Amino acid sequence: MGDYVQNRVLLIEDDDELRTLLARYLSGQGFTVREAANGQDGLSLAEDHLCDVVVLDIMLPDINGLEVLRQLRARTHLPVVLLTARGDETDRIVGFEVGADDYIPKPCNPRELVARLQALLRRVNWDQKVERAEARQVGDLTIEADRRRVLLQGVPLELTATEYEVLQVLLAHAGSVVRKNDLMQWALGRRLASHDRTLDMHISNLRRKLGDDRQYRIETVRGLGYSYRVAV
Amino acid sequence: MGDYVQNRVLLIEDDDELRTLLARYLSGQGFTVREAANGQDGLSLAEDHLCDVVVLDIMLPDINGLEVLRQLRARTHLPVVLLTARGDETDRIVGFEVGADDYIPKPCNPRELVARLQALLRRVNWDQKVERAEARQVGDLTIEADRRRVLLQGVPLELTATEYEVLQVLLAHAGSVVRKNDLMQWALGRRLASHDRTLDMHISNLRRKLGDDRQYRIETVRGLGYSYRVAV
DNA sequence: AGGGCTGTGTAAAGGTTGTGCAAAGGCGCA
DNA sequence: TGCGCCTTTGCACAACCTTTACACAGCCCT
Image (cartoon, rainbow over all chains, first blue to last red; front, side, top):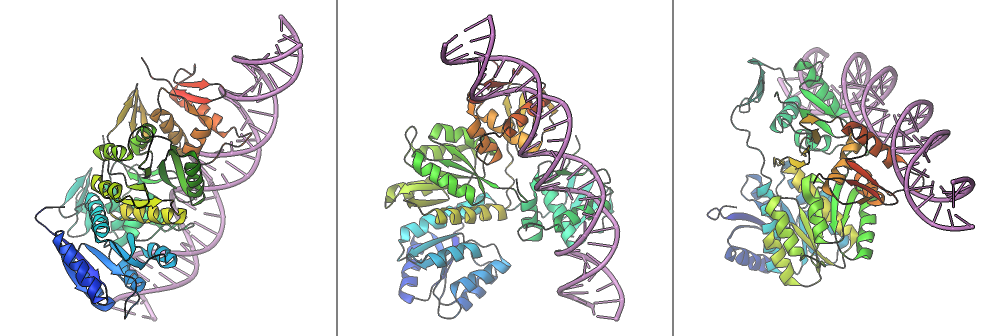
């Protein structure tokens, strides 16, 4: 949370009065505020990484707020705080299920909004994604992230897109155990369902392509996940 | 241990009734719950990746909840949800400042707690973090939490998932007695039934793998539980 | 000291769960 | 339509957790 880079909030709220009020308060608290009076505008503003966090009213004139959230989630993991009518538990629970990070009942206390926004941003900044830009070396593997390929002893592997993602995640955590759950989330972008063997297949294929017959490279940690073994 | 790994909640709450209630509810919702009745216990349980998320009451008998949070933050970025008295805005604001991720006013709605915990875990899991846990030493044992393994005089032990959990809990309380009940709850995620010898078996297997013939390491405290002995 | 009672140690059997992998199915894309 | 790739299905198998069974140790009581 650099002091010089202001955090950018996208505020999607149809009530002009409330929106202006909040926008003013947030500005005063050091946020850069972008405003949208309806879902359509909100979505397009969110498109181009123009903000760090979204404050979204559930009641909107055009699209339902939850639908906006759903569409946001289909494309990004942008943190979202919902504004809901006080006491409307349904909206709240559904909101969380669709993927909201937090919610505040209206009429909201601006100080609380700010506190929650800051907590959320702090969390997101702590857990920054690993930067995968430059080429890295793990044992005899070379990762060329920009070209999305991996070399085994200098020879490029013929990996599919998913296989690359899976291997990428394993390598980013080389040496430690990656839970199936997380591997699924990070590489495949969805949750692990109860009888889903997809991941196992990708691992199996990866092992074959890596010439990893004995599972020396990708180690199975039963009941947990997998771990890319680093040479000692 | 089902198809997917359960999330582990550390519940720090002094009110026995409320704690038990919440623990039961969270268990029912698929969490593994570890309980602490005071800040001291809470902090030691939070060591070593023993849990994924913390629920922390602000009002505690020994250390102030905020102080617990502060000490937690000094070491980890473990996600924390605060339980505060309703309407106490000071606690809330200070809580966020010290680094809480969320707060819920008491008396809390368990469904909301679960929803918030899940939102938080989802956020943490999306933002793939690479916080490497440093190895901890207990006598001649080295715990490598991120690799989920334990070394005995430098040599890795071949532990199963459950054995690892059991040992982990014992080590977190090294020197003091862990009740069978609690050990069961924390390591196996369920209650101790009347003629259940499962735990005894895991202890037995652990002892064998530790070369602990004379039960010098894992001491039996008849009628109570077990205790990992620390060398003096 | 001896006899019951309870709690613990551990071997072996049994059942459950998680994983590896081949093969078939399905989906999107050119 | 054909191709590549992701996913599903099915089976085999291995790892593991739990149960069962029996032996024994500690404790209380008489």
